[in-house]
Length: 379
Image (tube, rainbow, N blue to C red; front, side, top):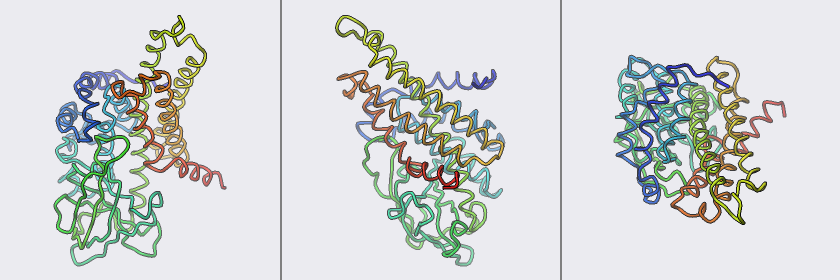
């Protein structure tokens, strides 16, 4: 168990004061599938987007674990899972690679806007034919004087419809395998760069998902993040942050869901007794609690390894697998505990279940995580 200090607890308590307002109308927004721009204004004002960035850019200078602790609080307090996901995507997609690998010119130009939430970020990795196989990407770029010329397409780009700034991973060295990828910073409106309409999806509906298309899109050579051919190193770092931050949010959602189920099991009566007195219900709730504690330990232990630059591949894979599958099990159990009410839209639990399914797919499917764990074990 982590003993958070007074400053960390104060930051989380301050965030909690915004969560009721962030949750207003979440069912209606989910039904419409629209990005909640009025809630994004509140996200900007509450300061959560400033957490992991240096003070010189307008950030709060917090470390990974503190950032996760606050994101856990966001998941606990804000009922709009799509908005929460967009917050996490914004933080890790552009801000983290810029701060860690970006040139002085790029960080000075873009990080203040990212910290303020005035410049919304996204990253483009997945391709229609590639899926989980990022190294099979076909989007490519070649040097032409002081520019690179990008051609290709990306899909499943979270925040794509609302983002101002994209980190696009493309192949610059065709035969170099992992050393052949390069990340580029591409602004919305760049000639040759097109963004599709949002793609309708099962859950996380308020976080818009799009395709991207590049046709002779010229990007200044200075917009390379890191060095040409160093994209896999950038991507590996970013994906660790993406997994830990997004599933810290899910941890908070699981905690809130458990509290709802406990209260419902105590007050809902059937056959003359509270349903929580029946073993079938109480065991579901016990399993939800176990899932939360295992998830918390895996996430924050992995964050500790990442923070201290220890080899964390297997830790992050385990954390992602555990968090996503326990969140899905928790959401399904909650629907079952609430019975017919859980199936109704007004209770918000069916939305939780739809959202949770995505967690076993994005940032590397559960099958990919098991493959990665097995590989690290020498199999």
